[in-house]
Length: 257
Image 1 (tube, rainbow, N blue to C red):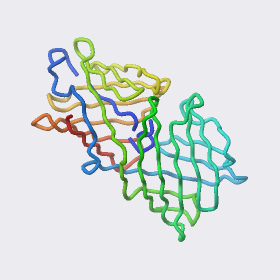
Image 2: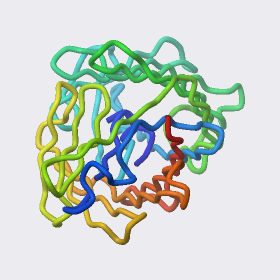
Image 3: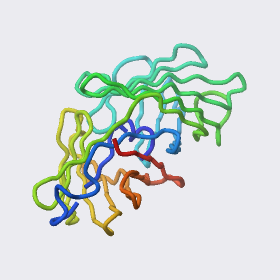
């Protein structure tokens, strides 16, 4: 899951099996430990002429936008706008149903080889997640067009998840506005909640007592796969998230509250 699917990090999904239910060691409240987590992100910007750009934030998901500050159709029912405040400063805004869910303030270094992104995600309940990304250019020439890979990330906001029993043989993974309730039978289960992306589903398998494998899709398109591991003392939850087309996973480490 890239940062932008941390946009949708705002979402991560789990859960379990018949005899475990309320006593399942995965259940409880979990808080992200930023110092132990590692987020790696890559994005691509391609100039198409006439102030038009192709943006790729994850996998093969490409969006084309005119950088005039107006809301334009984006992925999965969202809108996307890009405002050029100056040659070295862009504002990128994503909305769903008219509500802002992402604001990214992009700044270029003087030599054009470093891009900083002050990234804020807005949850349905009004709370926010703020990250500061620093990207290094891996392809392209000075200017925003090119291929960028993050070199450091800082999570400034509290990010918590809650895992509860679901029916007799499953679990629900809950964060504000988004609920993933599944059984670990390999079947796909739809998301619910005010922030759920239309057409999003989650399926999962229990590898063993302390390891889960979860697959996340939107309208049958693979978004990520996750390996979720519980520490032997059941107090640490590690999520290793693999995005299609990315060579490095994101690693989120949660501690039990």
